[in-house]
Length: 432
Image 1 (cartoon, rainbow, N blue to C red):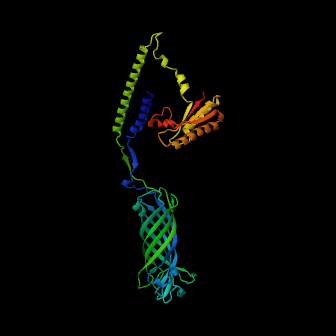
Image 2: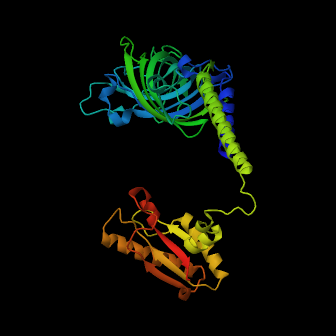
Image 3: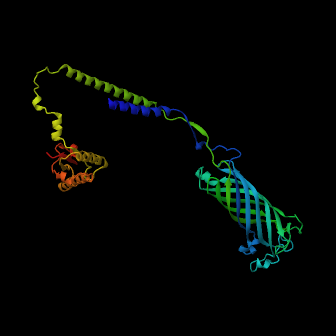
């Protein structure tokens, strides 16, 4: 009945979560896409600094190293989704290049011969600063290809946009003159001093934390050129910049929450209830059989003075146990002679008994004959019995009280292959 009761308790514990699991749960489902965050979320600022170089056909007349000049950007922007965003800000660029216009170049330098290559066909050099505003549309390439993942270390973002700039130059080659807002139209202030540009690039972001990124911005501009009257072209202007980005407020995205209905466990529940009812029926049947046996015994007692024909064949249970049963049996894994932690507890219990007695004891090592060969089994018997004797001595039992021996036959009750494990042991008996 105790086993049936335990089975019923286990079934009850299992059935409780099954019933609760039928409740509908609500989880985010990325397969449904991602929802827009609030307007105040997903804003960022970016600051970048690096170098750019003018690459038009006239600029190519100047040494490459002489054309490299500083560049900086400052942006504020927002992501509207894991894929799309925008940024807008200001930029500063110093432009160094060559020109055919020797009369009115922007930022003409009198020391231009030092800037030009040997045999250059351009007539003059120019240096000026561009200050303006720029805006870009951002597209997160990593989220598009790999799917959105919060906290990703690296993101690659493509962008494209446009800018407008105003040109300023110093009228002295040594930079000690005055800065003018002027273009190349006969030196008139403001004439041809504003130009437009189209840009595209790859923004590489490396996360330092939830709100801070390191940036590597690889950019290419096509700048409208108003530097040589009558020769309006476009200037190719690649640049590379390093920077930092700080993200405000919420930086992640949430998927729509959808209800999820769990599987229907009612068939399994019905089957468990059926098995429990069957087990209960069998338990009641066994109880009835036991009651019948007990009632028969109570109703068929031998009268007083009635001789018991089997009395001479019976011995007190205490006599059987004291004469035949060993004090303890230590069991071993097949082919092993070490004492397992569970069997060591038996050894400790036997040591406690021995410490309160004065008897001597006989320790016998066994190894079954159904596996291995004689050489292996003989060694196992010796190793097992000596290991147990040492363990008892370690627990404070005098070794003189322990007699060790081995038996080269199976354990008396090991009469088949199925019972062979019973012979992989060391028995401990009191000496008679």
